[in-house]
Image (cartoon, rainbow, N blue to C red):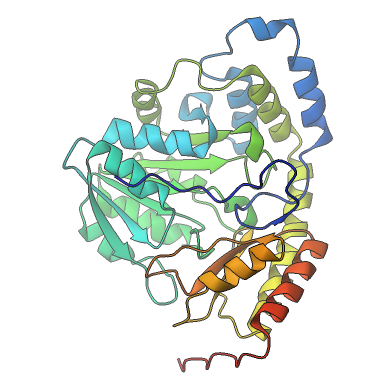
Length: 350
């Protein structure tokens, strides 16, 4: 199997503008730091709550979902790993659109599952009917999708859940706070739906590794069978609970990111890139038919990290996290200088 490759992290002392791993450019709520300081006391000698009680209670109040329908994880990645582990035996089918989050391939390989890749449409729309026809034991939809940033309407996901019957549909909503729609409302009508959330992006807590799974109590109990006993530490639990209590801080930062995102997409299109509408905290900038690996390398040489995926589906694209206005200004200047006087690609007729 091929291991999942995370985005590059700067080495100690290395000064780079980091636009490659979709972190929030703004800090978490000041209340989070105070909560962590309070938690960093004598209680650290004790194990944390196995079911992350205070974190789950805060999530229940914020999202209006009963605690027995919520499971906390060490980032949304751990929750995805639990789902793959609890659902798939060797040879079982798992289906998801591509291109999408490449960790799914790794998790499927660990289980020895049979992967059914369902190509996205030309505009990155999810082919709902094709996914349903795969009749997989597990179906996963990243929404908004990474790396495209595109959003599938909740009504389409509801139709997919209905068609799948008792087969499990996982909706990975790691970036949903930057979008206008969520599938959380599907939980009431569809017992086969599990929704994954992350506090890494919108809540600015990537370093704390916090995630949430919302699902029918039976699904949550099944996942607990494969969960590590104490999968979240006391500091992370305190940080997560306080972040959820100060959701207004998160929403202000999200609005700042969205404004910069729209301006960034406009400027990139002006430079000759194709940029699909993004509902996440990044944009996908494409030049069809051109390998953008050299451009990513040149930007790194100039002190700016962006994400390039050297695969046939994505080698003509850069995924660019939204930074501060100053960071994005530096990026655009570096792109212009790197492209130099090269002619812009001819736009394809639609």
